[in-house]
Amino acid sequence: MSLLDHFDFFHPDVHNNPYPYFAELREKAPLFWTKSLQAHVLSRYEDVAYVLKNPALFSSVDIRVNGMRREDRTELGELSSVTNLVNSDPPIHTRLRGLVSRAFLPKRISEMEPRVRELSRGLVAEMTAHDEFDFMDGLASPLPVTIIAEMLGIEISRRRDFKRWSDSLMSATAESLRTGKMSEEATRSAGEMFAYMKEIAEKRRLEPKGDLISLLVQSSDGVEALSPAEVNSFAVLLLIAGNETTTNLLGNSLLALIRHPEQYEWLRDNPSREACAAVAEETLRYDSPVVGLMRRATQDVELSGGKVPAESTVMALVASANHDPRKFPDPERFDPKRDTNGTLSFGHGIHFCLGAPLTRLEAPVALQELMERAPRLGFASRQPERIDYGGSFFLRGPRSLWLRKS
Image (tube, rainbow, N blue to C red; front, side, top):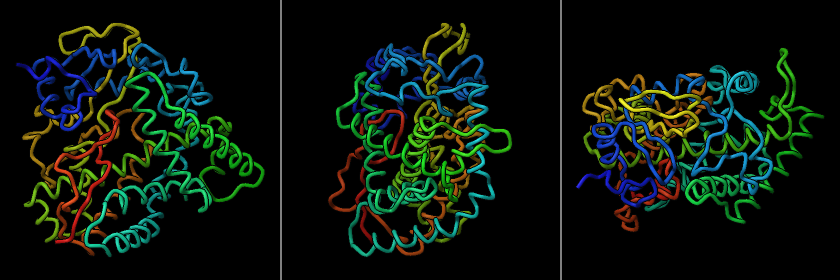
């Protein structure tokens, strides 16, 4: 029996370990129709890269999931009608990226390293003061959400709310893709967050400070400022793309290291910033925090010997592309010393993840601080053998990861 006979993104076996299914997709059905998403799935590296680098053929606007457009989702309220970097094409995307990218310039990100290291060191010390601890709760989750909250200028007193909103919206996004509905809790969280962010945006417009929201609501160099609604949408994007990606990357990195003792030993012998960065880059390829990206075909397109019809939804499986042996030899082997150039976890082309430099700063610094204080970690007795990857099929990372010092 083929693994594809009952392939479903939402099936627990696929959710727990999608890579055997992706391998069969690449070899037997590189263009595959899935009923669960009402979408055409592309799994080979060449096809996925082609989709991502051709926005004129594969649009980020008016994408239908389960036959429903995001703009038709009334329970999403204001969020359903506001464009951001993810759901826009040029020229709107060009305008938004031109304004937002000023906050993610390499020099600005590199200047954040002392703060990232200080925060990582404190979180690691507090977490490893216990014999057993949840790595996700102790380091992987609070580090990126704190950094993003500080960048935006969120008051310390509201950062627990910020994390709650992030978790709720993340769960709701996954649930809405599966069922076409959002829970009352998610709708309420979205309303709370939008109200708060509107208030902050108006305050920063009248009295700018040195934070990201102040930058976004001020026109500069001929680039029009973001509207309050656009600030809201961008904040949600940051929560999902900037927070969840780094959190998942850290969790997946620890899982890969513990499951590959030789590579873990290599890192212990050389816990440098460069080695930790190599682990993070290989984890991006080996167990991508992002499983796939969705697009809308603007016309009929021939790919992998089949036709993607105009106006149909495409799921470009970046996690599968990263395991394509045509691009990465021996792809099922976790090897931080390999050449990972071309990994698609941050996307490709005009939609290449704006926050990639921040993730590439946070993950190696956090891993280095962890290696210096707790170089030998294993699964704790309370950690279930089967990892809980949460409810999202398009983002991948452990919900909890109980570890012990050894």
